[in-house]
Amino acid sequence: MALVDKTVEAATAPITHTPREYQEYPGSQYILPTDTPELQRLTLQHRTLKSMYGGRILWAPVELTEEDKVLDTGCGPGLWVLDLASSVSPAIQMTGIDIESRLFPPFPPPNLTFQIQSVLSLPADWSNTFTLIHQRLLLLALEIPQWPVALSEMHRVLRPGGWVQLAESTPWHVGTYPGRPAMEKLTALYRAASEARNLYVDCAYDMPKLLKDAGFVDIASESRMQQMGSWAGEDGEAMRKNHVAVLAGIKTPVLNAGGYGIVSSESEYDQLVEDLHREWEEVPGTDKEFIVFWARKPLN
Image 1 (cartoon, one colour):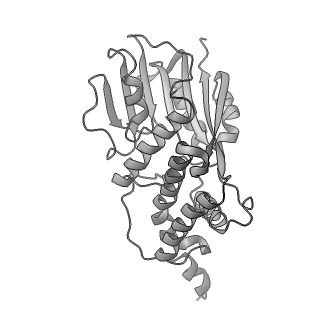
Image 2 (cartoon, rainbow, N blue to C red):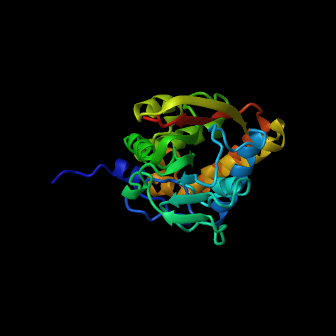
Image 3 (cartoon, helix red, strand yellow):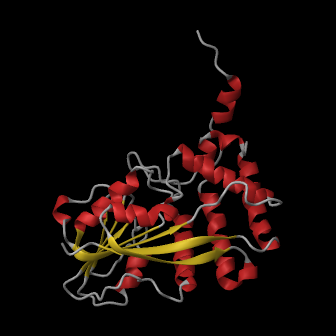
């Protein structure tokens, strides 16, 4: 009988902690929770991202009319599509989809429906249906080989000439935060958890090629820097809270995986969250890029 490596076993054994609620969709690798604190974080994130871009939420050059339909994939609580619905004709039909319904809004307007659906397998009868498709921040949800599938599905259900608008963040990079121990730990945890789940955290760098390979044309983008800390004003303080909440949100997956040799207890993880919150305030300059992409399905 082969001997068990007790060191490896101890390093990968789940760490006891108080868990949060997570998606139960079969095969999902989404690493963030689906509970009330996450809803609060997503609300803060939407408001801050909108502020970063001067209140703008639509980049795709489309003038929506009553004949058009809009799809928001991976919508979570539907904050983006609810925002859009408030500024266009109530006759425009809009659909929000996600693989988890717990965050869906309880009382959406009559022209907006929400349903459980995966962007990896959209209904066959949706082909050539939508004028606009929106998706934001699925870098912690979709595995590397799933991105071409998702974009192909979006391309299929868009009308010829329709537009897709995607928004993603660049990742944290290991070894780029000397003298910042909390950031070094965060980055190592983030990368370890993402690699263990095969998540495409570098997708923002590759998005233009991914869109082109899926058949899209007229690909464009606009970026802003997400700055962490009150040194960057009101948006910086809000973004610091948002990203600290992201770290708090991935605690259960990290501890269930044994802490990846970086943290060894729930108290150590919670201390890291506190240290990061303080470090971003005391050491100005932490930021990373947020990029909005838009592209068109050819008329032919």
